[in-house]
Image 1: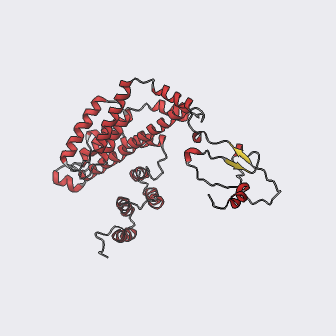
Image 2: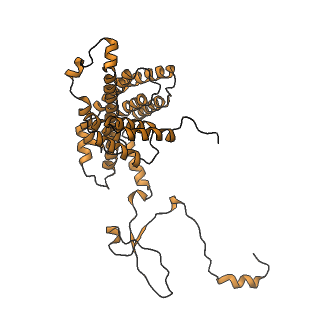
Image 3: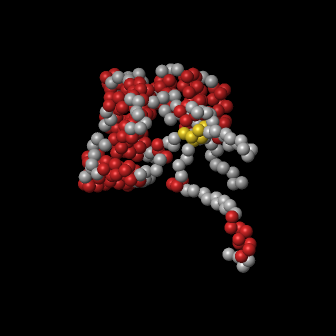
Length: 341
């Protein structure tokens, strides 16, 4: 609006430029390439350039990624038809089951009463869903997360039993077949199945990993009990082996070999078990190298238990001067108390 109509008449033929930021839901991002084979090969991405009036420049567009395309009504109809294969009672039962598992995972086992309540609920859910891998993995996670353990031997046996239940609930042959297949990216159902199997593989690897740690911990506890000092106190012979140790094969080694089939044991997540395996095999130098790599390559600051393990390895190798050096650094890395300022 303006009081002078002549000024408005002059602006009648002006070009108006409007800039507006579109939301992600309103746009589809495309890829631009400078070469004709760019959309197929994925190379030669087009870079912005300034053109002089009259100069032309060609560029080539690639198709958008399938997951970036907006969902149309036909897709919604397919999804609803797939979900409608399950009855209302089946969907309700699944939601109730998932809610119960969520409640179990939310219980903080800080006191003896909390642990008792957790054990009761876990036992009830196992009776209700005995072969449900997600529930068994959540129970194993709850056992591992406990602190202030009084009976370490019994606690590690509980972890081993829980890990065995997770392992037994998984069809490993079927899992290996599906993971070995090359899935067509356009096949959504096959892609969902593979992602589910990858999650199952991670649960299997975690169960094998925690079982290996528990077996190693029990073994170290037995070594302490069978030491000459404790044997003299209890009046038993130090080199006397229990019948179970003679009858049973090397469970730790078998478990470690099974873990190697599914994951890279040299990665940070499973590296501690590799350190314990090399230490049991008296390859102390390799164990020390693997542990050092874990400490150096970890994105987060290394935990105190890793440095304590390194310290014990140095002492076992006989490098007392390095052990003394590391012990001094332990005070700097993990001070007993922090200064006020």
